[in-house]
Image (cartoon, rainbow, N blue to C red; front, top):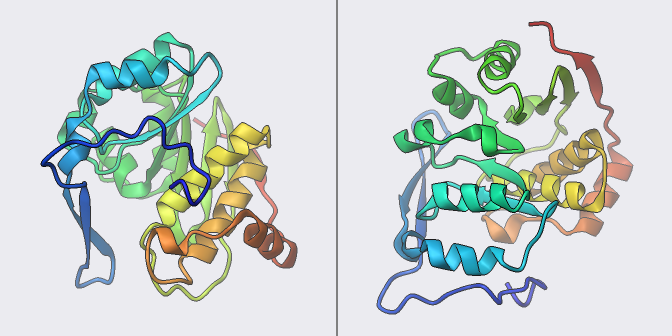
Length: 240
């Protein structure tokens, strides 16, 4: 992380505990299936969360997934500091249904995660957006659609960005890459459509390379790719 320029000040080492590990399999249909051992990720405490968030303030962006312990405490403390929260509930476990997602600024999910969250079997993105808006009227939705691009929903404003046509080698980490680049756009002050376009381009580059972290492209690579394959977003009003 430090080699990549990340501030690692708040990372804690847990003695005699293994690092969290994900084992990625491929199911008979060719989709990824992930087996997760939380390891040290499950040793996060409310005190550590409080100490970490002490250095942040209103308007700062918190990115989190369902991969650490005391997630409820994290969301509550971040909300109390009036931070923006970008939450991806993967891995989608039953306790996610008990969270108050009204605390979240942006919820980032794929179609199956969104359907499970809403307690339905629907696979139509527009219907998922309608159901989501009825359930969470104040929460922004980021819906990733794989080869069909991505959608965002803020209020009744619906933005759709197409995917890039590439030959996929390994989709591992594509969702994380998308989320990271979208968050980067938010912190830079880019518009939601522009942030989504950069995220789509970054994910498209990542699936062309085997591996997870090793497949994440640089900002310069994403800019060069977008210059060659410009995308246009479509913004409409969601019809309830």
